[in-house]
Each structure stands twice: as structure tokens, then as C-alpha cells.
Image (cartoon, rainbow, N blue to C red; front, side, top):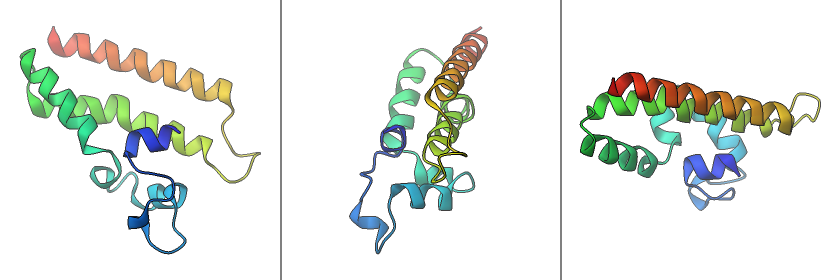
Length: 113
């Protein structure tokens, strides 16, 4: 579910082609092609909001990517690992997401400082 929210794509998106699904497609493009994976609407909405608050668009985009979206994508991928023994459990995933949120909010306050 988290992968779907971050990418804005359906798990069985037609554009993947063949037998590729969201869980196979994301790791092929992440992290080296993050701009291909993350839904552009997430970034444009956040940068529009930040611009109205006086923050630089490039700073906002980097903060959003590095402190929120990329760590969230890492959690999402850890939850989608095929092997149950290697897959992240819900408790650990929730802790990581809470830490990501705290880091992001802390850095937002510093950026507005």
C-alpha cells in the first residue's frame, strides 16, 4: 500500500509491461532513478505549499526527497521483500516511519528557522 501511495501507480500498472509489477519495478529504478519512481504530484504539491510559506523550491524538494520520501520508500520496499524471514515486520516499519516523520519535521523547522 505504501508503494502505491508513493509512486501513484497501481500494483499491476499496464505501463510496466509483461510480468513486471510494482514490487518488481520499483527496485529496478530506486534509488538511482528516484525521479522516475516517486509520484511527481507529491513533490509539486509540497513545493507549491512551501513556496507560499517563503521556502526555496529546490530546498523544499531536497528536504522532501531526502528526509521523507526516500526513507518512506525504503520502508515500503522492506515490507515487500519476498522472503518472510527478510521482510520487515509491522512494528519495525512503524518505528521507522515515526522516526522518518520526526526527522522530517525537525528539518522543516530548521529550514524555516
